[in-house]
Image (cartoon, rainbow, N blue to C red; front, side, top):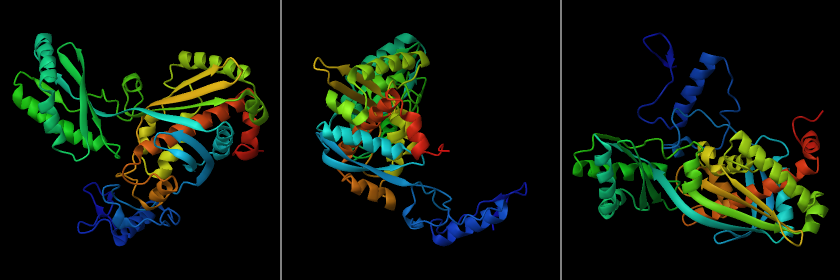
Length: 396
């Protein structure tokens, strides 16, 4: 049973000796059954070992089981991902896996998706306050002059993080900065926080005119979509592209390149009018489904699903398509990637462990492109609602 607080409410049980034991989890579920009346039979039926979860969750009681389907094979011609891949998608949305598989089939017939990692940067964004704009200006110059020493203090806290550069965005008597790191195979938010904190401590010791500073000014846009991250990269900036032959579009998707391009023009204007950070179809579906399957931080879907969609009808009638993901945050090491089912999904892709993060980023981008091609074609061919009627929850 839980311990009662001063107001008489039950407190969730915890074991100060070993809170990640089966007994500790069982005590919490017993408490919750009595407190809420819920049976919790399926929530407590799972393959996770509680002892593997420190650092991933607190007050562990069970697992929310999300169905995982597989789409593919996905043919990728990347610098890191090369060959065919079967992509695990964790979702409860009917038609989703089928739609991605359809897009992947077309891509395979067209020779595969070409992928390129353009940039790599994870940030923490401190802000420094001064008495006047002149002091702020002088500090900006000092940051540039002392970058090597700042870098040394930051990197002393990490084995794999490297401080690339410090961007500056002064306003009023404040200097907003973005400390840009490469983080190896980890997503790197915690790594960059620790490294930037060490750097800021040294900076503050050298510049007594700093009135105050905050380690994070919200300018890193952590777990929020933003224009700054789309322009300057957060995580990996990845491009996936393909040229679709005109005859394949007609035989496989029942559309032609000119109708498809006209639909893209209208969709671009609609995106502009609505103020969205994504002019494509549904990047968040692929990103979220892969993230949940492979143990990524699901909240990073907020910025990771931002996308630039570009298309062009070539002189011969073929259709060039690309998607750029400017702030894709993925990891193949650390966080939730080592948990049992998440690790298995990464192993299915050949993406578990060190040296694999570029490969995973390219697979995600290629999957997004295939899904956008399939959905946009279904809209143009007037097959979107029919597909949901046949495969989704809205069937009669």
